[in-house]
Image (tube, rainbow, N blue to C red):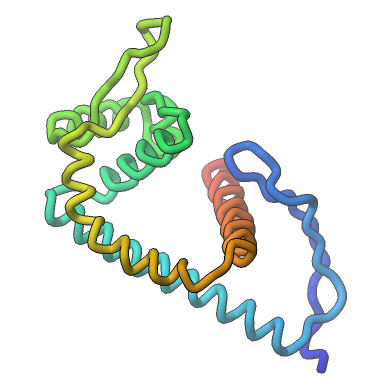
Length: 186
């Protein structure tokens, strides 16, 4: 059964500067089941995001951190995992702060033992941001009890299903970051 007409549009989804899917084009009609699934997935993503924020706020509250501090620590951790540590300038861009606000943020996180500055490049003027050992220990103590719960959920899916979920989430993240970048330009 056909339930609704879809609009036609074209968007290139980019994540971390790399296209992650070809030009996306929706056209024609959509079944009632597909429309229901799209709504349900958006609702589930919103709920997941909200729950993750609640957990992040609890960590921040326990350790007297600001929300911006949490965003910064997450950005630093993700960059380290990718093997591409952030500079202060890139951190500021990632979380939308001016250079002065970024410096104050880094100073505060460094004083709190969460972050450290590192000069590991041949050019000693280049500063990279790293998670400090003490900060990592706090994060591990707080978030480790969550791991068995998330691992149990992922264990229910095969490798092919996890690849599909990975592709979906990369696409959704790309859509959000491209829209966020547009909003920053206005």
